[in-house]
Image 1: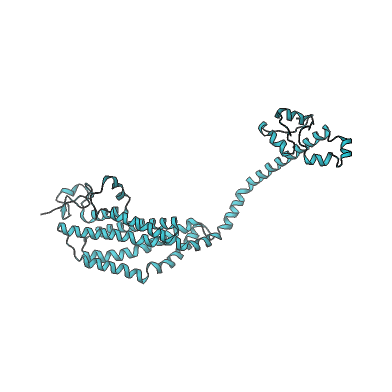
Image 2 (image 1 turned 90 degrees about the vertical axis):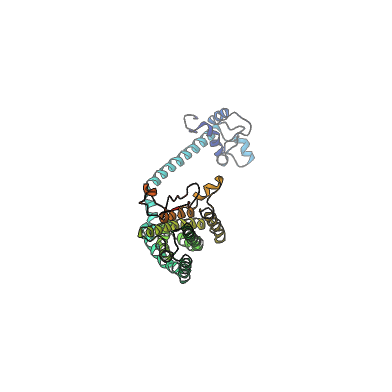
Length: 367
């Protein structure tokens, strides 16, 4: 306050910064309180003269300067009052604009959203789903891929032709078949999925740059379009192997086997998509996927039954391990309290899965 007029209003810690911003700062070491009192009295001795004040009140030649003696206390006071008034006007204008923007912002966001996304999320998903099915059906159901799956199924069926599960050796052979099924349908979809995002990266970036669709709609449509295509080949594969190898001949066992393999396919595909999206490099993704598949296969419970304690956690992170256990349980295990009773239909009573780190126990043939 100076001569009844406000020169500054605000935090005391910011007073020196304010007066420095308008060109008034001490030229020598000075107590802030003394500096403010001098400004309130219009005294600018030992203080910098603002350029605006100098242009308005100081003469431009030395002779006039000697005559006038520089800006008077009244001139300094008027300058400080005017500077504070300008500051307050800017502050009020900023607050007014902010309040207007707060009211207008929801409408602007709504307009911007409708302008960027010309279609709803569901419409985007539907279009991307149809496009994905049309594009990938030729890739998934290509002649080479169908031949690969069909020939593998036939070879497995011939090798395990009418395998007999009535003896320990026979059940061990069938366990090898089930383990290969769990590994094959983990390896196959994973290495197919890791190429998805690296190959579509350029197209995705181009379409997203012009706001064609939401990223969430693309991801959900991509996964959904793959699910029915991923189910076709496993069904064909299992029908051939199941009939030729002579696995448990019940519809329930076949249906549960199908569901188990399909869940394994979904898990492997999800892991492959994650690896591909994280690395965005086909070579690096393939190397990492091969390491994961090898670790999952080795810890799956077929090659080694007794795993060291400090490595026992690995098998529980392996979806091959869980798939193999479920397949063994479906074909050779008896669930419920009737496991030891005569009502158990398994050819081996007392079969234990994952008991004492043993995937296949030592069964005793039923009489």
